[in-house]
Length: 236
Image (cartoon, helix red, strand yellow):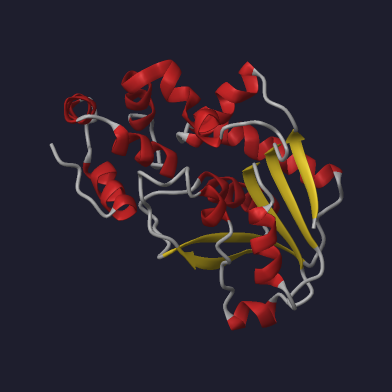
């Protein structure tokens, strides 16, 4: 599997915009989708037999999105490419989420037999927001074994062998902007909750959540998303 990345190191500017897209900032997501698309095109990765691959937790929910899925769907739309979804099982646990990142990213998604036949010998492109370890790549290889020998991974950050904390990288926007920053995003037109947003909400105290939800005109979608992802209700 060949890897293509926009960056191999982190500075304050890239960290800021990266973390904003993790929280679902639409402008930041569009910015990276366009940059990743240019990276794909400049490396001649597109052909008549190209498909985008998404390995995602089952059951797949439309109530919230993982960032790499949003980016993949935007890139698919730009190029009119099909997306094939493969699924793995994972139960979110706020306490161990980052501690278990090695096991979490090693989960092998399962591709349906129909998709295995339909996309046999296609070039699979995998979009990731960041690569911290090689576990995601290994899991994708196992999933696509016997289906395709040509798999490319395209990512914003390739930070393998770097002393970078995934948690610190993801949380930067919240650390800089607090609950006011979250409220601004949640009030954006067409905003879709991301898993990073829901994890952060799960870490807030009761009073912070009350103030945040009061600042949102229609909190129903957020409450449904939170329950779908955490298997808990927003207790206020």
